[in-house]
Length: 363
Image 1: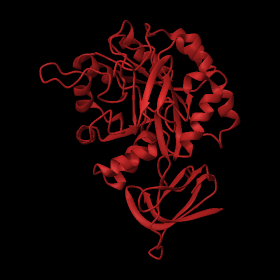
Image 2: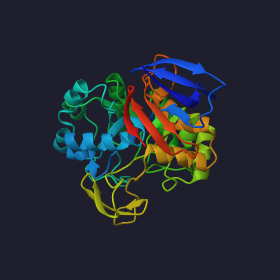
Image 3: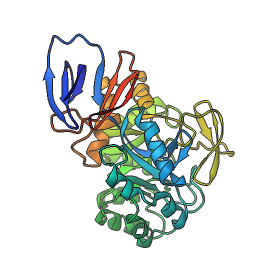
Image 4: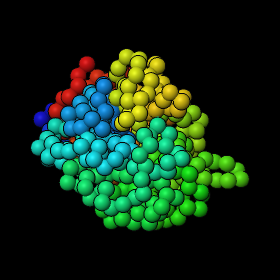
């Protein structure tokens, strides 16, 4: 049995104590005798991630494994590799063999599901997505189910059959999210009533918050309990993140990270699109933002930097996402939960990462 001591963040409290764990958390002991200033928090959860360390989800199984291992070392113990808008054959080749890999490595991988970002999106709101949007159809989904655990799909409800397709996704236990959409306020609200519970990268690539023509952002702020938001402080201004959190109680951070993360400046890709990394900014040649080079650890630090409490930062980088995907054994440090744990020093730098009780990073 392993044990670590420090300031534990659990059940919306911070207290000195010790965690005892194997692959699961066995016991959480509070003790005033603990002097360590290390912070012990749940492993990060990223439900929208395209790549990292030169690896892109669309390049297939080995690349998906590579990007998952890169983000695991930065504390992301639950990861949803994310596709881009692409023809069926390319998406199927990208995901080929993933189910078998996960089933053979359940205790050793942080990959829990796949987020399909497209192709059922609005061709007039692609953002950095390649130009391969198509009309929603069940054959696309059926062709992929044998290859990968499809958990989330970004969809634009205004495209032909888009609104109706939400029902199909829900029946398949795939969470539909509105994104890359020009849908009006009323259609977004109708989609929420139909069962949409989260929007994809809130504010980005969606109809906005115009006072005469409210769109997707207005619907999200009015009616959602969950939404993802990119917390690199480039895609979304810090004040807009705070406004979102004030209106969406279970707002959660995602990276929307691409292959350029952890790499030198230069040319990279997201799907079939070329992007250019300069510092922490990635853009297409038309100056459109092309994903991020963010890790969830940096997202956590960013949230602290802009004024969120440690407890709120933990919720936004772990607990809220776990609640959204209805996984009760991750996202918190209660007895019986998976021993997915991140240890930080008093400057919030990484010291240790545990996945199912095994050390996967140690400074």
